[in-house]
Length: 232
Image (tube, rainbow, N blue to C red; front, side):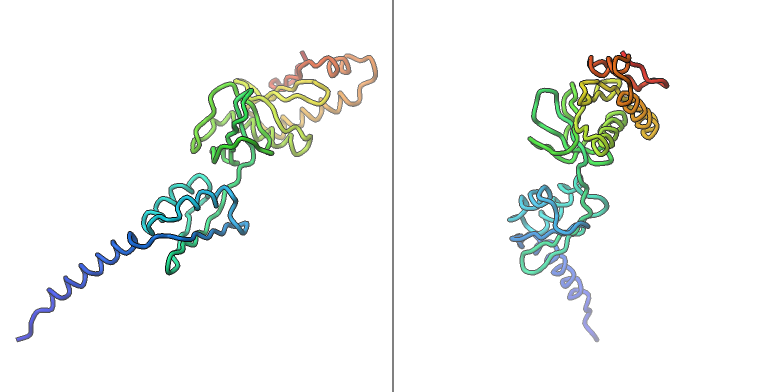
């Protein structure tokens, strides 16, 4: 009569499960490499990954995915390489504009979709001042704020206007002529920018002594929130 092999099979499963659970906790990570769609990962991401060196394999794997949620799109792929290295592959998001509190130097860096991906004491990105408290990292701007920042990004590319103020009902920027321009926070961006270009061309082509020239030199405001621009 053959002896049952069931106890041996059960023991083997228990041992395999124990190895699967315990070994990742015993292995401690000494190196983390990172590649993105652009090549080497940014310093911002590298800094996040460096904070996980020394953690166990299981802890590092789970916490890295959590910490990179705001800095990446799609799934982060993490591969273990013997004996103590993690290889991380990501599609990295990049901040494209920023906001800060008026009269302060603490910025929140924002990606194209409006998510606050990090904070910084300085930036070369186009930025807007706000009167309210800065949003927390991980939060998303409301649609009007995001619309205003996208307008500012367009202006920075075409007119080197790199900063403005996000007010409750508009984006306020100041031209080199000291003329203020108030943009709406909703609508069609191309149409709004077209109106802006038209007004600027008129300001640049007026004859000496005209009303338009006096507006540009007296530092008044061109309000583009209406169908027909208002100068006040």
